Image (cartoon, rainbow, N blue to C red; front, top):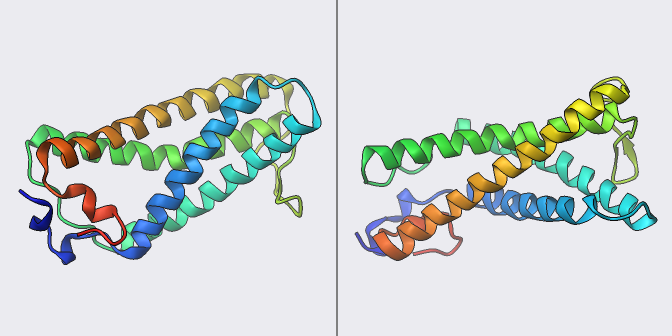
Length: 183
């Protein structure tokens, strides 16, 4: 199947594309920021990056909710042809990614709340604590934020790998469905 095999109606909508690419950039950025800031010594830079990381997480959470609402109310293009196991793997990966779009920021918010560090979105809007401050609970929650973030990173890499496989090996035009201005 060539790139031209998918017609215009088999492409994702412009809104779906914006959600996909904006969240992709934000998630990758927040993940990289999290890796970088975690090993910094206590400093104003570290505090600033932690706040930016929290703001990114809350923004990702909100955009994920909007994306899910869009997805539930708008039919995506038909699945690509291929072996049943690939279709099941794609669906499972997408479901897991959607779950992690919510779980990672919510667990991060719970950790921040339990540790006694409130989230003040963009330095202007204080958000309620997700859980009551509790040092012992924060120590239990903290590793889960990291574990879930790494799980999402693995799934994102699998998703990218599958897209490249479809594009470069299968040459089925699947990648063009999510690219703005695609064929």
